[in-house]
Image 1 (cartoon, rainbow, N blue to C red):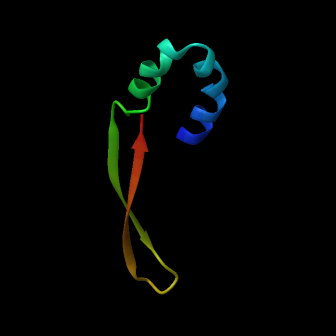
Image 2 (cartoon, rainbow, N blue to C red):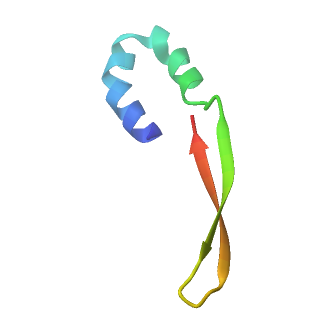
Length: 55
């Protein structure tokens, strides 16, 4: 997502360098939520994975 944002804004930032600092600010997430995902495979074994939501 960061690459898409940067490449999309590149022409604008080239013409308006005063906004480069704003790009640095918005690329740092305000909140990262981490959670466990428990699941069971076909053989009945329980697995634990981690999920992330970045806002």
